[in-house]
Length: 254
Image 1 (cartoon, one colour):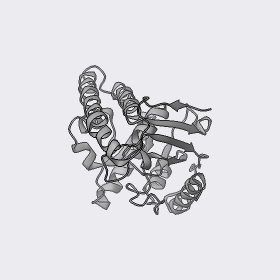
Image 2 (cartoon, one colour; image 1 turned 120 degrees about the horizontal axis):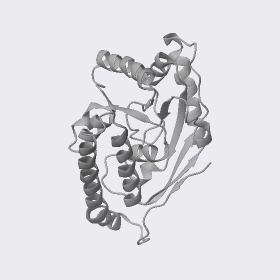
Image 3 (cartoon, rainbow, N blue to C red; image 1 turned 90 degrees about the vertical axis):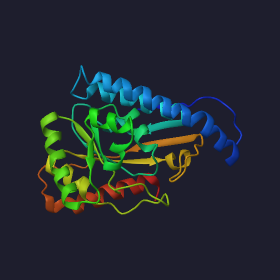
């Protein structure tokens, strides 16, 4: 099963200067406008739907608009491995701020992100994240992060929804796959739901880390085989983490 998102047509010239001008005067203003509009609509929607479901749908509209503006053409592989009747912990590698729009657009299950607290302080975006029910994680506070993971596992069962967490803990500065933290496996085992490894390819080229310059290009989202956790205990989290990383590395061709 395949899905595609195509970006806008436009000039084909490459080069930093053109990309810089295109980003500053076209893409960045459109990003800001979409974020403000969707943030305001999300805020209004919460008055009528405090569950966050409507805010999540608005978030998907926002994400699709960002991919369109950036000119990212997304191909998805392995979507048939995601059973819409089940709950999961999705675990992708992390290369770029464009990773989130790619996943939010193409994974249609009701799910929430676990994201670093700093993102929740960004105007409009932070408001939307809170209203949609995404979970802030205090990365600088290990004890607080562990409590957050435990509460998130309870949320999976109580609200019957999936969660997404980046097991590397942050974006890769080099583009290479980093070592995985065991929080994702801990969360999946506590919730007794399968882990689905996912590999993102090309988002770093669209928007490199520490850059505000966008480059049009192809993006691929590969979805791996679910890793069951039913019957496992917290002591098995390292084994699950290794299985998850091995699958992602294989999908990346490492």
